[in-house]
Each structure stands twice: as structure tokens, then as C-alpha cells.
Length: 634
Image (cartoon, rainbow, N blue to C red; front, side, top):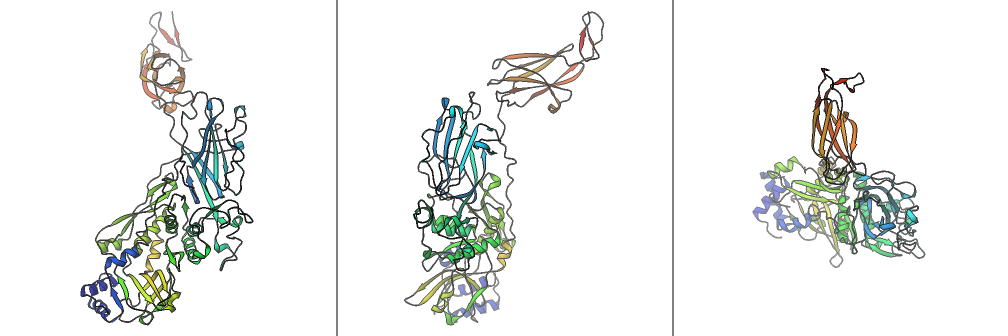
């Protein structure tokens, strides 16, 4: 057995006792020299173990933000899981009708459908509803916008232009053969008026909120061991809506399928065309591991909102989905597997020296200078217009004290929209990476029962790991030597209770969903003068197109209580005047400009005018009548 250096013995004692190096701890560590342990470099195994937790950074979409409205002939096929928002990828856009006053736009929102629903549509962040004939019934473009939507059923009929357009025009070149089966898609039709004031030469930014695809959940399949229900892998019509991140990962591993299924339903896995995902056979997937991760995610209330595409790396997508489930990818007997890290597990077996073959290799984890004790998580936030938003720091005061100060790191959770979920996963990532002991051990063949994700406990008096519970992260079996090699990490149960109490604190979101009003240039050079009972208003018209300049008068300086007293037109930048006879008193005046759509500028003013009481002394003076009007007395 290799000798253990004194510095290693002291380090092991410190790691096991949380930093204490008492005589008893040192004596226990010295027993290493007569046990089955060898200590390698702190970097060697620590890096490998941490790669499955803290180092497994969430990776953003290869094609950028999901909310972008894009025309890209090389765009990947997108797939929607859970409740997400997207701008869509343009497949068709043409102007038609008289002077091309109509725009017809067809967009793909998601492939491998059907999706569950088209929940909402926003134009420039304004919620817009649609009624009969798919015409907009609310928002700034009510009556001038249409939106026809398809779920992506397999097969499905083609999108069509709305009926009742001027001269019964339709989108040119778009026919009933353009069915787009399996694609959740929309036809967006917009109408510009003769003044070009409806859209002002541009398009509003679209945002579609949808509930994504269905999939197979073996927990609801009565033909699968432990399952109950009618959900069947090879019968897509029985699938359920996917909101669980581990079930999404399982379906990604099976693959995204479209097309004619022959004797089977369209879109049936392995019977039609693979258009995305990994496409593994069911024999190549450790389904039981995904079921376990799904149960943990459900118990913790964790969901998924994912929008990967065929441009994304398939393994990265799988890792991001499992990250949302509090799990990491793994391999078990050559099969795609995963390890759930989000629950406390009982030890399934106690092992001793008699169960091992050769030395146990132990790493003491990261040094204090390398440890991270504070995570700055970012997640996909609906409250912030579906952008990635950083939450407040997630930490533990004991960690900060132990490390002598904060050491932060940012982690992205691109498939998580719930802020508390992101906070809890961030705490898990830090806590797992800070576990003091990790390593590898080779067992005799009877311990093949230990699977990735299982916990076991060492029981060997005098051994530095005596009584320590560890979690199996990776397992391999060598049939030639009949040995089982397991990579493990210490498992501290207290972290699970603490993690699930974490609350994500997000920055304030912009209030309201109504876009800012249209800017209208106000009048300028506004002044008033008083001559007897007459108040004269002078101003210069706006320098941009306007319909009229409105004049307001009030008895107080509050514009809200002012009364409209008249309106004037004229040329751009023309100097204008108008008069008013309000009666005796102090009056306040304002001007505004109004465009041809009725949008009004901010008021200019108030400017005050004091009209004095008149005393009749000679012919030509004015007398104030009881009605409030001035009467000329001659």
C-alpha cells in the first residue's frame, strides 16, 4: 500500500472535521497508513466531480434569444417544452392587394407538434385579442390585423388568408398544399391605411406565448413497469403535455419525430422521420433514472420552459433540461442516464474493506481559495419580457464565514422561468461542489447493484471514511476483471432542507404591458397678452405633420381641469394667433397638437393671463354683464 505524506494526513483530518485538526482527528487520519486509501492530487478528481455540478453551466440557445422575430433561411427547427414565448421564424412574407396595403407573413413557432395551445399574442408588448375571422378586437391595431393559428397536428390543413379583405384578395402563392403538418405556425396579416399611419412603415414586434409539445411519460403508461394509465410511446394521440423537465429530457433522448407513420399514427417515434433530439432507441436509455428524476422534480415543484432548436448541441440541450430537474447527465451500462441531485436519499448498502478491490482514491475537493460560496443565478423571466434576468445572490452565511469572504460565480438556468426554482437549483450547485470528500472505489462484482444516484456508506473502523455517506455519480463494470468502479462524492443531507427554502429575488419589472404613446410634436413659442377683456394667444405651429392645434383654458394651473376652447390649423411652423374673452379673473392657457390619428401631444403651458374688472367711465368702455360676457357701451 502506498505511503501517505504527513501533509496529506493533516489535510484529510481537516476536511473530515470541517477544519479542526485536533489530536483525535489527526490520530484517526493517521490510520490511513494501515487502510485501503490512497490520496491523489486535489485537482485530479475534484475537477471531474465538480464538472457534474457547479461546472455544468447552463448554455444559451445557439440562435440567440427565443423572442427574436427572424427571417433566416438557415434557421434550425425549434421545439417547445412547457410554457414559452417566441417571436417566430418567418417562412413566407409578401405584400398584396391595392398598392400592397396588405402584408401576409407565415411563421413557424415550433416543430414536432402538436403543441398544447396558443395562449396569447403581443404586438409591441401590447396584449392583442382576436375574434371572428381571426381579426384583432383589441389593441392599437384592432380591425387592421389578423392572426390565424395552427397547433401543428399531424397531419393538418394549410393556413389561409382571412376572408372579407378588400377585393377579396388573398396571400399570393399560398395554397392548400402548404399544410406545414407537425409545425405550430401562424399566418399574420396586416393592413396599412392610405395615410400610412397604421404601422408607420414598420411592423410591430410580435410575441407568441404558447404551451409546448406533448410527449410520452412512462409513469402514466400501464404497460411500463410501475406505470399506470393509457399513455403509450408508440401512440402519440395518448401523449400528455410535458411540463416536467426530466420527462422533457427523456423525450429529447427518444427524439423529435414528424411525418407519415405508415401503419402507425403520424409522428410516431421510430416509424417516421427524426427531425430533432437524440433519437436513441428505448434500449439505449436508462428510463428508470429519468423516472426517478421526474418524481424528484414533481416533489420539488420544478418545471421546464425550453425552446431548443436543431442548431443547438444535442447533449447541451439534454444537460440544460436535466439542470432544470436538479439532475446531471450520466451513463449506465452504455445507456443515456442521469443522476438526480435534488432529494435526500437513504444509503442502500454499507460497504467495508472486504467489498473492495485495491485502493480507494480520495480527493479533498477544492482548496479554500478555489471554493465558491455565492451563486448569482440568471433565469428566463416572463416578468421581464422573457429575457434572461439575474436574481439576487444565493449563499449560506456559514460558507462565507468558513471561506473568509464572498466568492461569487454566475450560473445560467436558460430552461427555468420560476425564480424560486432557479434559486434552489443554484444553492444545490454550490452545496454539491463544496462537499469535502470525493473519489473512486473499485468493488467486487456483488456490488453491481449500486447505480448512479444511489447512496452507500463506508463502515470500516479506523478508516478515514468510516461512517461517511456518499453518492454514486458514475459507475462502470469490467466483465474481464469482474469489478465495479464507482465515482462518488460525499452526501450531506442537511443541504436538501436548506436548498428548498431558498427564494429568488428578481429586480423590479417594468409595470404594465401597454407600449408608450406615439410622440406628437407640440406647438412652440407660446405666449399670451391681455388687452382689456381680450386675451391674445400666440404660438408657432409644429414642424411635423399635424391635424390641428388645440387651445385649452382653466381656472387653475392643473391641466386636468382645463376646458377645450378652440382649435386652429395652418402650415408647418406658421406663426398663429387666436383670441379669447374669458371674463375677469386669472386664467391659465395651454396648447397641444393633434395628429391625423387623434394622438395628442404633451400640453405646452400653463401660461397665465389676468383680466381686470372694468369700471365704466366713458363711451367705448366695456361693461361686464351678468352672463359673464362683456358688452360695449357707446
